Image (tube, rainbow, N blue to C red; front, side):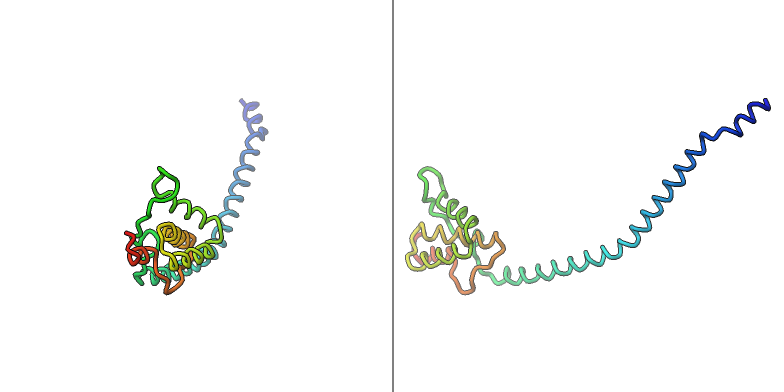
Length: 157
């Protein structure tokens, strides 16, 4: 029996486990300290970003509340011209061109064509470029008539 107690006393296999527990606790403690230090700065930065986004949203609401209908919200009705048998293909083709090219320049050209000669293709091109401007986060120039207004005034509806 004395021999078993002596053998148990001299056994050091559990000492390694104790070392790993102490090391793991130290790593967890350091990680918690780093989180505590960094979280204040991250919270301040995210509050600043949130404030800027809210300010930008306030400006977009000003433009939206002006009641100027452009793009799909304007009530424009595509003439369904373009590829035979594919409804709205003219409008869709113009939209794809507008978003892949210089959208503002495409709109400016479409606006000049639609105001000088408000035909179905010109109005489809203008409506598509209006929507491309809106989708791209760009503004339609102040004072410009919408494609829907030109469509209604031209009598083409």
